[in-house]
Image 1 (tube, rainbow, N blue to C red):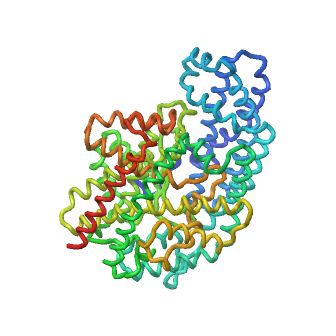
Image 2: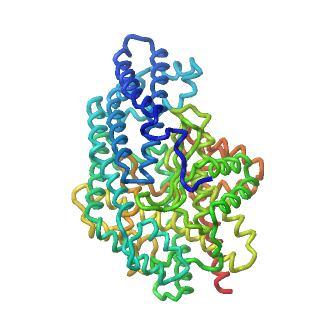
Image 3: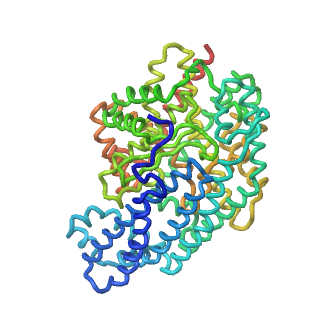
Length: 586
């Protein structure tokens, strides 16, 4: 078991003969696809659809394998010139198929008896949802030439600006205690037990953004303007409308979610105020103490200990989950520790071609890092449950993307709290969970408000760093209320969150709240139904790639447009806040 991941199952390097051979295949599959669409009028409908599926599957397998290798290498070394070069070349190649794919999708959307054709062949029946989505999306597809231009310009536009944000935030040197450190490392100090360390790390972090704020502001402004213009061209009323369409989610569901969250904000403000008072603050909790540990749970975990802990925990829920966790550790799926050039945060990447995932974390040994591992391994378990789907049926939308990951968090936190040996440990665990929940309620709401305001402002003005900081501070004040000290917030949260820097994925914030509360509801059902719930849960995960968000929830008898469902999840967290207050009073 190593502390860095292995990509050898993909390729052993850029000089690997298999890599060089696959690179050569890129032009072949691109040419075959581009030539195929020129012959659509020569063949009957079913034959065309079957050939289209065959070519699109081959393209997805090849490009996903090559992209995975290059992007994963770059994520642990943003200065890797070879990875950057190959990613650029691959992006250019995939963009050269945009026109052909647009022609193909237009052809599919115009088939009058599509349902009949689909039902006449088992391969097409497997892709019924996929093909019907093409029809639904056709309303927003532009001409072949325009789609190709947008795709090509994005390489040097939105994608390039996004790469710049990743590069700057992973490589900026933070001055701390007379030494240089990384942004990931300094942000980890927010969880330190020493209040002096937390405050100085917060100040050092904010100071570091001064070095890169102008470039990041230009990146964000450029990406958001590109999104606005593309939405107008496609006929979307807003970036949010486009996001909901792509997420296969109704606006009624989002309104029910946000509405319920706003109702419970005062409860979370109270939690923050009480925590602030316990830590000696009179005007609300300062940002740098938001993740201050409380109680007594200072145990540090080695990689091996985290593995044993998670396996023992998950095997009581689903044996195949525990088995997958063991494989992830033993077969080097995980890159654990922070280092210069490695991106911050954590993520899980599915690699359908090898039926595995790869997980990046910035592990420091705290219990919170073990929870992060559980979260990312939840994504891997979600991926495991869709591996048997056809390769074009393996993409799930943003809202359900956080379901399995947050469900895992519920398993680990509830088990840890229930088995706590004393009130000190229980307080530490409850407070740790509330830290995370407050992030998916208050902080996610602030990010939703921020991105909404950014899109509104970017339509007719450029936002310099100070403007962006003001927008962020106003969003935080509304979301956190009097729970935080308004003079000690985090004006640069727009700079460090890569979710804002995507030209094809806006509003990657509310899905975290959705996932947290949806998973909480699913976990409650597991507690009620026991083992009989697990097959239903696995079916639900499998269906996330072939159903709308609302239809997926119906598998568990849930109506997502009903605010009452979301209230139930929030009420369970409110009870955790009551327990926290009871424990600190002791």
